[in-house]
Length: 450
Image (cartoon, rainbow, N blue to C red; front, side, top):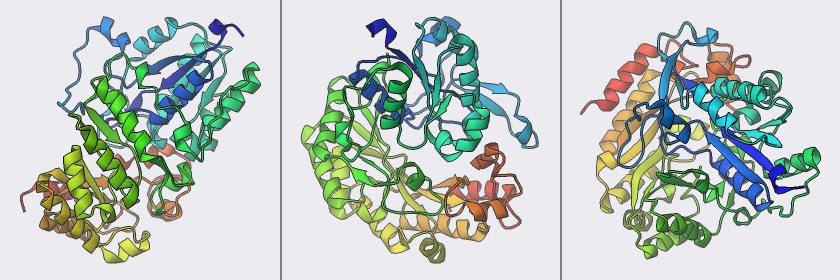
């Protein structure tokens, strides 16, 4: 097959939601896949609808969204009509990312691909996925569309019925996509990775971005814990770690190209202490002027005094700990991942390493089925007393998790029939013990000095 006939188009759709914020958000799975496809001889064209620097935005002469020095910030956004299932929610609804016209013009500038691969994020973000596929089908009517990602995996039946894709990929997509493309095009892969060895995958294709503010790093897939509210075991059934030396080299390559901000995407970054120490020591030896962020949360038990000091010297700037609740009863009921003593020790070790209380962010879950307001209040007070900063994380029900059936029973919404109701903004499992007014009071408590 001639090279010009080996074009593929990869798309990260825009997001429709009440709120969205760029906490170093990149579609890392799609970027790994892009590198693998390039290694197999495919020419990759890429549209990230959430990219605030996308060239398709330049002709629009729109003012760029506010960004912080560490490159967190807002996406481009436009207020749109709420979808009918959410009409009763008294909040403004937005499209985040490229305007559809800019997306269409970006498509028109590309050669006809052999296939289009679309990723998907949260289950309740499917509106942007469906719209992107519909526009792609209009631009390239005979080209097969392959949908993968979180929504495609967790809500496969919904995606099969409504998304408009020709093929749905569930779970890890690398081998599935290579096999599917071979069946569609007759092109046999020249390189097949060993998914038991994550370092056999080529590094994510951040070079597809003409302007790169930050990079995302993955040192493992999966999580050894099975928290009943979490989708990690469904998306990544096995916990596999990389060689820390390979991770350090990957970071160094982008640091040498001028990237200064790196976000870890791991679900359990510090759970393997030997791995964590090797990784942090390797980063420290490079002595690069770079900063690291942990938006997914860190495992408290992994933060020994040695690890905390290594984190500080390595340049870890954004710390997020996963506590979820100070209720010992619920801690045990949700897997026993962390105890209050584990959390206290982690915070004390971070203090000794030089982190101030406001630098130690702590995720607290609110809105679990049957959860009372008092439990969340107690957890907020506990986090502040320990010398850390609480962050409320509203619970989003996830199909297939152990807590799903309980969430369905507790929710006033049709969670199985409509993924839009999984949106944590609407507090899907609110009840008389914890409703919107309670949530606003909790948010006020989080930001108060008391």
